[in-house]
Length: 336
Image 1 (cartoon, rainbow, N blue to C red):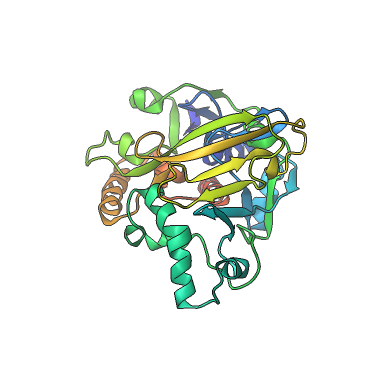
Image 2 (image 1 turned 60 degrees about the horizontal axis):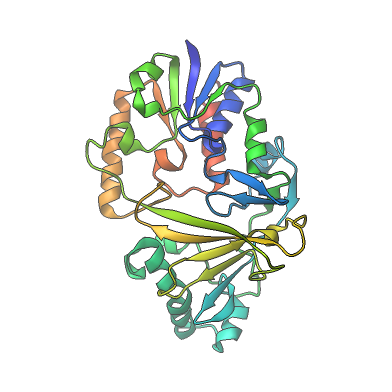
């Protein structure tokens, strides 16, 4: 018997595994996919680190979390800046005083309504398959309207990218810890349950209970990545496409994330398409799903050997630092 079986080798599982191992606990990590690092998994393409599951920028205002991740990677300074295209014209984004200047309107209720129509209505309808007014305010509120000329996507004190990518960072977090890939905990829960005193699970809660009450709602994504024989495709790291008739929501051009080693005459882009089916990325936080998740969460009291966290287990759209904060709290609670 080991002390802890950790299900999932993303940031949540890797953080739990590292903290518990460092305090003398025996740990094994199993992962359903064929790679570690979860959705921040990246690969080196001609000197650029390309995220397989969309762009990920590490940002936090917590010194503790910043110091924790810097144990496993050297971070270089990077502040994310995004542009938005509407009807063929490109604007500063998130909306700020430059954006107001570009649309020729002074800040105020009328201008804010125009900005919502231009940059949020079509994008949100594509992303969530429902109109803007039917999307949770907590989701829409993630993108601010600023009344300064600050065009940074994030305003956290600490921001950056790991010099050699997230995959290598998570490899170092998991150094010396047994990891089994292509291993599905849900295919034989009783078998894996018998291997450890406690299980830390970061998968979907509805699947854990065999969808007994029904499936939780998610939106997914589909990605198309290609190398183009040009020096520059769009001139920025991320360009949002807010028109409803354009099927993708955004394009990442990876060299503009600060990877300067890509050969001249090449650039790599990824188009991101919203999807109803596929990997669960974004929880649909409406009344039906909130009530359904609560019913599944009640079942956890029947399983004292099980701890649940992470984006899927918590049914919350966490940023990376929030995932790590949750994992640190859970792991340290086991010995404090």
